[in-house]
Length: 215
Image 1 (cartoon, rainbow, N blue to C red):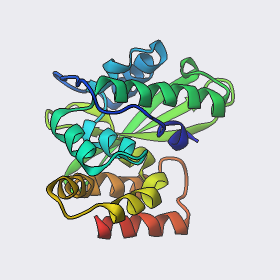
Image 2 (image 1 turned 30 degrees about the vertical axis):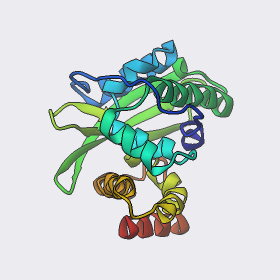
Image 3 (image 1 turned 60 degrees about the vertical axis):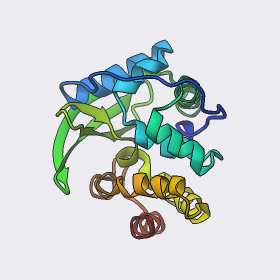
Image 4 (image 1 turned 180 degrees about the vertical axis):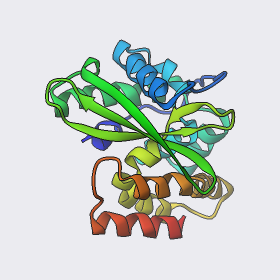
């Protein structure tokens, strides 16, 4: 449900946003700040709490060509793209959970590492329904914590990502996009290790394995 809610956008690249010091001092603080920003509709505040390369790859599944993807990877995400992504996320969250983001409860985190990178699962539950799962944060290059979209939702996108990669050409923009996806290896492995929303089915596991090989 959350994966579907988080991947709908129709905006095209335009003006960009420059980020400063990113992340939070703990995984819990990163998710708390993220939900707060999205709940207030201050979508640009999420820029310091996620990884732009991951968001660029996910929104590219909505029909962007390799040149658009390369532009977002090089120049940063346009404000309109970031706004559209998180606005759709907030709306989808409410539709599927029947609770808004103010109903999200952030629990404790548990750190682990994959291929030398630091990750942490963070317990997340809905106030009314009691539904729960684990979202995954990752340390950035400055040692700060941000939500890792690929570690949290990656398995849900393995199949469309494989289809997207298969349609890329051999030009420099396409190679840049492939490289950015290959850089998500540790996050995808973290998703397989932590299985944030419960056991991953064999079919989905196979899709992730193939994506790891093909990217």
